Length: 368
Image 1 (cartoon, rainbow, N blue to C red):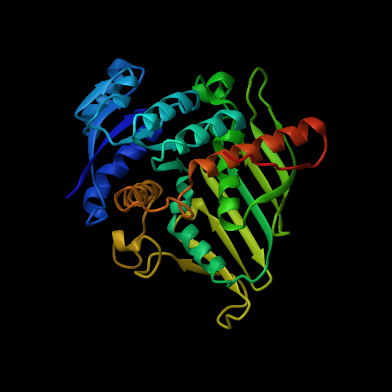
Image 2: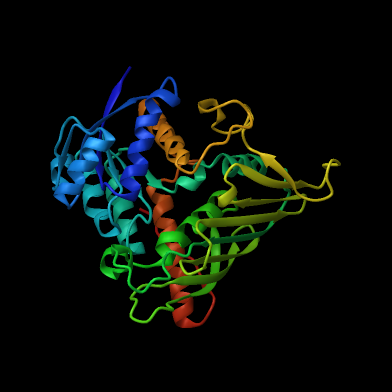
């Protein structure tokens, strides 16, 4: 089987999730489109990255990401580092001819995100921005139902992403440093909601919102609220917070159409709540356990009723990206390209601008 060398930047949360995904692709997505060979992993802490290389199965480790970019054995560069390290290494890897996967947000600002998209697109390599929730089976099933017209005219979107880990003033993490993170809950959680809304409902037209910081001394936002309008005419709301006590990873969304509605809660990953007007079996929502053999991604997994988990979304994402590389296929529409990453950043900044100016603003996108 054809092999592709993988170089990883980042050994912590995302480095672990992505490395696990590449290990699983080889034997779960059988036959794999390409066999990932874990060549090298980079990180700033020598002891930590060395231990990560041993645990995850990389052939070598380095504290200098340039060593990965110049390694001719590597054909895919996966950037799971802090937001401040998304732009330069990703661009350098693409310009060295490597396909690139970069975690969201693509950049700390819309300008930086646009520059990453522009520079990488010019190289012709495949590129994917890590919005892994597109690869939740229930989310993909929702997209299929919408594409089939089962919901009719889409009218409402409500999306919220709530966590509580940020409610600790003693925490010391790069995610609270504006130079490294760019923003707070907006870039960390809000961009997931924005991308999911774009994926399921369509492009944004206007936003009216604001961000807020609650904890004294914190330099990034803790929460955001926004009312939005889509180009289709649908309207919606977006909410994100890292201070919602006892909400551990509650990414919840609902879509209402003229002929049906869908509801999803990430804390119940395998379930999609469905109501279709012409379904005589139920007068309200019915719970669909998305584990049947005909459901998205289930060809990789277990018999019906045997659930999959959060980490498996990264394997679905990796398999999709490897297939696009192996067969020269488009990453879009189901995978988020760097254009999608840029557009999510542009919507996020429009929310900040709306709050600063105290008015509803139109979302304008730049081309290459």
